[in-house]
Each structure stands twice: as structure tokens, then as C-alpha cells.
Length: 371
Ligand code: MN
Ligand code: MN
Image (cartoon, rainbow, N blue to C red; front, side, top):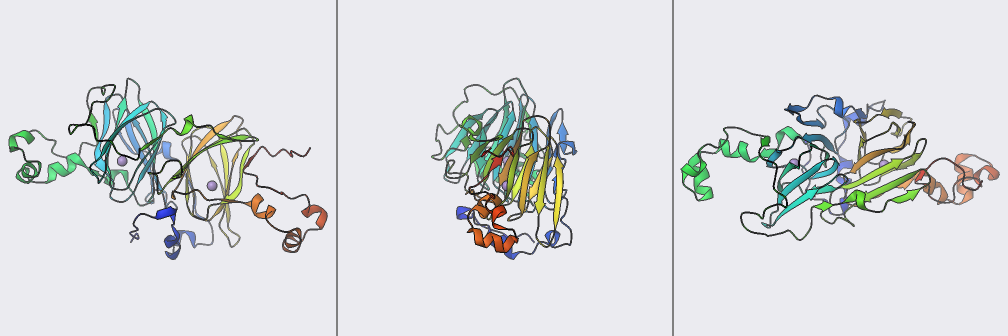
């Protein structure tokens, strides 16, 4: 039922617009908030995975997400995703990943808080906690029908295939495979990984395009009332289908009204409290209040804004399902019009139109800077 789409060069998701979405065709806009960290998910001895996708968050057809915590010595085992690329942001602790790509290259990377990874759809990988502290990261997938609990795990596969076939494929005696797990392990437990990482069994054979991007180590773009860190495929070439952002908004500041022509947006609150507005045409409008651990979703092309309504500066993480970042802000749309167009369209007199923005406003604290 979900359309199969190959990689979308340039992040072109226009094909989606040909697929009617019943949930967006109703008289009222649907709920676009999901309390991810309050959901049950899958837990084992303090390690967990909690997911948001169309099964529990129906509006989110374009993107899914997972909050994952790994205790020291725990590995989210070797697996791949048949139906989505994986983009991640490390919230706390440290993580090591190993990645094997279709060219047979491998990369082992270590991640700290604020670092990002991107694994193309179908590429094999694992994630493990590094050091003595637990790690917590947010995974974002470019397909809302993705499920973290339907991934292709190495132990699940090896348990299903007859041992003779497995032995022949790996060119080993069957005895070598004695004692393999009899089902999917999902969270594997072992010693704390060595530092620095050991070389692959085949020897070093590193990929040419790195899977790691230290997002929060970059200089943010500064605005009155906020800061923005952004990574898309122009800075992180392997991330062909995803763009990630972190907004830091001071109390009262707003990421102004805007829309994304080429992408839907998945939101995760790291800290702070936000009013998110959503405009869906035909007089349809809805607001949600997002608190830490909550997720929001903005369908492609829908008008929206994010305002910090708490009393503290806070950060919100955003993932967009296109590798190139596109947006149009209401302020720049207005600033790009001749005054007579605005006078006619908005029915306002010239002296009021003259006070409207003459440039883009991306993030603002709402203060009039002319005064
Ligand atoms: Mn994965
Ligand atoms: Mn947006």
C-alpha cells in the first residue's frame, strides 16, 4: 500500500503529492503531537527503544522516529532497514557504530553528544554504548511506515536459515556455528568496547563518504532570540534524503511562520515548552503544545511555526525528509511583493502596508529592531 520509491536525488518528494492521504483530507486537521518518551516501547534492563510511526502517530506518514537508550556494554545488534534511511542525533553519552556499504567498505565511528549519523537505506550497521555511562539518541527515519521492531537483524536471519546453508555461505564447518542464538537478540550484552576501536576483521577499508557529522560543534547561525544548527547534504554529502536542524529558542522567541516545499518535518523536544501552529488550507488550523520528550509532525507544504512559551531557553530537534533544505517564510513571501499587490490582496491602506517586513525573518524575539 505504501509506494516504493527509489532514492530521491535532490530530495524530490513530489511523487508523494499524487498519493491521496485520507488523514489529511478530513474537515479537521488531525492530532500532530505524540508523547514519545511517555510511550511504552521495548525495555530490557534499562535499555529501551520507543518508536513513533503511523501505527501510533497516524499523521506521520513521511517520517518515523525512535528514542533509544543503551546501558554500558549494550549493543543494538547488527541489522539493516529495508524500508528507510536512518538519521540520528546523540543527546547524551557516547556511541560507536560500524557500517558496511554495498561497495564492501566499512566505517567505525565514535559519537559524542551533538553528533549526527546517517545510514542510507539498507546499509548494515550496529550501535553500541561507549564507556561507563548510558547513551541516549534520537533516530529519525525517512518513512513513516518504518518500524524499529521490524528490522532485519543478523541473529534473526542466522537463526532461521538451516545451519548447512549458513555454513556453506560462510565457508566454515558447521561446528564453527554451534551455540548461535536461536532467535533475534536485538539488545546484545558484552564488555565495554575497546578504545580506540579495533580494525575490522578484513583490515581497514574505510568508506570515502563519512557517516558522521559533528553538528553541535559547528558555529550556529545567530538570530535575535535564537540560534540554528543545520546539516543537509551540501555539508554532509551522504545524507541524501535527510536534513537535520537544532533550534535554540530563548523564552518568548519564535521560529516564524513558514512552510517547506520539499519535505515533511519531524520534531523532538530536547528541552523547553513550545506552541506549534499548523495551517492546512480550507480554514483548517490546529495548535499543539510540546514538552520535553514530545514529538510533533508537519506534513510537507503545511504552514507552521514554533514558539518557545516556557520561561527558559530550550532546544528542539527537527528532521526533514529531503537532502536539500528548502523553506519559504511568510515574512520573506510578503517582503518579495510590490506594495500594490499587498494593498489589493490584504485590503490594507498604504501606510499599514509600508510597515510590513522588507526582509526575511527566520527566528525573532518579536522586538521591533527599528526602535
Ligand atoms: Mn538502525
Ligand atoms: Mn519547519
